[in-house]
Length: 597
Image 1 (cartoon, rainbow, N blue to C red):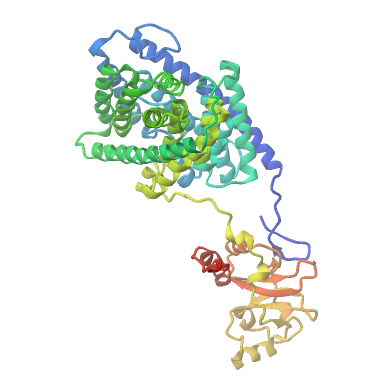
Image 2 (cartoon, rainbow, N blue to C red):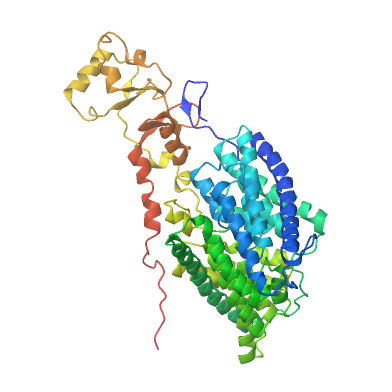
């Protein structure tokens, strides 16, 4: 916070990029990450336990819905789970509804990163019940929400700023994703692309430390193997294959837009029902149960389906049917307002679509070098890119989850295709649509603050009307009464004989009765608010807001306090003009001339 300097001025301070506060927040993020990692393990075990009880009638961990012997009775299992979740949402907390990430974004944007402590427990438990009874969701979204809630809880217990609490929330959320998939780099990127709405050293260090720590926690339980272990890809794609992957990603991008719109149309339909929202998840679960009766692989998280798509054993018509049914079950179930994640279902849908599209390309052009496994990998990442527009996180996640380096180039190309289609066809994403509907403004572009790139000296008004410090108040009043140039100003810098700033006075100060026999300098009773000529306009604007002043003098940075100019609010606003002009198409400055004949 700006402080008066030894010479009596109030000026902007030059805060370092990192400080002891950064170390303190990083230490808190380290502890939060351990908790988020353990929370992720507990959730996975609870999902397996509930799945084993619901579908197999025994106590065990790590079970899946596959291989059950319930027959048509399997339809009731998701319905029962949805009824329990509905009760928990109504009488526990409505915040457990949804897939987690939008809810975390809303707490950051509107509630200073404060999340109710109960969400830390209610969200994972409700998700475990939902997925364990066959819900076609991933556990990662709720784990991200629970990790974020843990970070927020710690931030509310410590003496931290709102920005530091936001960093702790993001660190906990990113740690939850890293602990689920063993993907620390993509989890860090996801935190910045979807949660933090900024990129600062003070937030990067705690988040990166948290994701690394949570990944180590995962390694202690599961080892360092990739979460989707697939055979090594040894064929390097050529130019024709790369073109095919770009087109594949673009097609999946169109699919991601359709899936996102379909999800919110289903949500809108449920909003029209004449029954309490507590019962909506049970209605959506009926659809899940019926589809799960015909195709059991629709039920549950389905990480084994993703592995099958990536290693090329789940292809063709089987992959197409799985994609269609999984998509329908997930859209209806999530649209009904139950608890569940989006990443695993989107990976399954995108991976299946990519596998099918790659198979079609191979059938039509067998010699261009397209690999059905890379097609599935690109489709998986492109689907999440198009739905969330987290381009870098999607690319890096697909690499970290499979450890396939030869897939990086096709991933970047295919995900970029999906990203561009998403930008062209969809204003909001699967993460932000709900927030925008609630009137929450969401940042979609991350740019350097323009005002932080402009020096005060470059925008200051040079011709400043000043008052000599040793001039009498009576003479000054006579000058004001003459109504000459500059006398209409409301504030005046006071300078000494060498042009150095002494203070500031307003017309009210100068016209107060009883001071006729005094000097102008005698009316100065408070340190002046001023900025250095090398201060940025961001510092200027912050200083104006903090001290509620409309104009500030600009003084030399050599310590002599020589007045260089003055800045008003309108000067600060006018500094944006070059930025706006830079967005307009300009005429070419270099023209190519081709000789004829």
